[in-house]
Length: 440
Image (cartoon, rainbow, N blue to C red):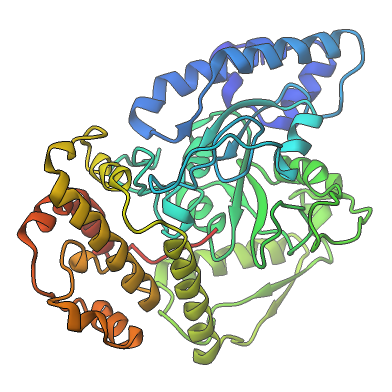
């Protein structure tokens, strides 16, 4: 166990036991994790605010606690990462987008506070797409994250960096968020474990209907260990559930622990895309293994309807519209940030001031139209404004429907030239068959 080359791959449970027995130090483990991040981050691009020295300082404090028999619990000294939309005191929270002002958070959000209270070593924060509204890591603020199993592929999203970091051995504990798949998609695409906790089980701030923070780990046992800390109450979440004495530590995949447990087997949601045959085969094989271990498998009937799916789609549309409406219409800095998304430096459009001013206005209007239509992927409208003032007086619904169909409005060559480099990589991604939106 003392082989430093293996330290970054150890589970939180193994590390805690090794710290207790003084076979390992949080400092040497953190050093190994830092080396793993530095080795792979040029390829994966999963981190933001990676601070090796701060992590080592936390590790030294943890080491001192373990040596004097004053450890804060099983997470003390265990390396962890936090998704960047979970506030950490003193750090800005861009939510994956270059369109917002970067202001330092005044306090740790509840999940981050619980990790710090437990003595976990925060190695880095992790990346996400704009507003958490894509099932990839594509972001106008962060560098595009890649999948550790195949660098040509996305790790999934919106907890993109967390999924990649978990699979690549950036420590055993990773914290993400989920509304419509933002934990579950990257975990499945990166081959790690997650669960979306029940609403209110893990307090968050600000409270948000549907959003949950949860663990992303390489083992079920580590997720249970992390849930012990995350599920502690916090008065800031008005939707938080009453505290319950849940025996998280008893959650294990050992066969004797599975005997008698009931598992629902859902192979058809009832609407939407059909399940791929190889995916269904893998799920059925997992069910057979659970049943062999003594679990009770109960087939479930489809429960989704087209009306429910349409309602969820409407929710995403309205959330996008609210996000976009919060942006000011005419900001040269915003347009410069969009240019940065295409790999250009801030202020690269400064010499095009008239075009940039017109472009910023059209960008804002286009995003409003696309957001209202719920089709963030239809980037063909970017750079193309209404043909004349009369078009501005059309009902909003008619405009948004036209945008959603991808109808090309009259082109402004200057605006198109300014926006096309930034829009192109996002448009190429969103034309991919794997670009279904996620949210979290």
